[in-house]
Image (cartoon, rainbow, N blue to C red; front, side):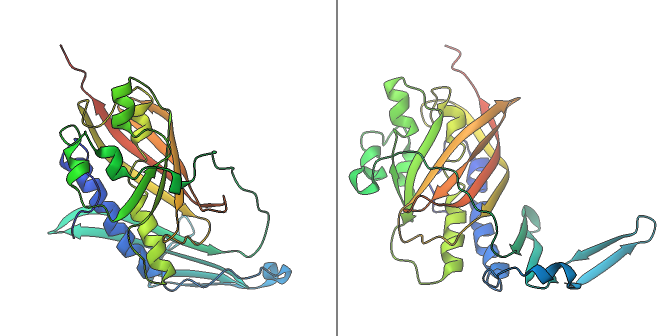
Length: 281
């Protein structure tokens, strides 16, 4: 698989992190392709029998626990829950474990977090324009393939660092660089791939640091995404992230994807191992 996203100056661990997200994006299409659209829950659902289908089932008589594995589908009236576990291996090495689940629970309570106020993407510079003059500072960003179009609503880390500023958030408009086919699964998978980029940036920019300028090692420990609505990744989507905590060389990056109508389409939380090596001079 070709690596497509800009690589940070953190070595192979961060590069592998991007590859893991890409592989997960491809694999998530398999179970998602069979997911039914949201159904309207019925009051009678509570009286309907619970049916569970799976490839395998084990029963622990002592604990009285059933364990279902492989293409698990639980149905109770109009309520449908699907789940699966995917392990990604290459040359016998485990690269990632993906846990995927799906729930069609029907209509219910609804509210949304409000997106931040940012400039329209059409009024912002492209990331290629913002990289001009930084070819030697962040060469991995400059030279990488960029299948995702980025437009920062704030200064990217390398510009912020040169100004001597700090940022406790990161907001960037993203969309596919080229038209995606009319396949909702592919749009979701592309967003999932994109979700691994910039999410840890706020851990370092909160301290006024940047890739390229400072000696930083970063690697993804785990990555979780909750999908709320179908995304159209041919249109601009705002990826707004921040870091609520960093300690013991580990940090969390979290945030949301918002569509142009200001609705959250996905929530992302990533834990990263982040090591900073200050200049001894």
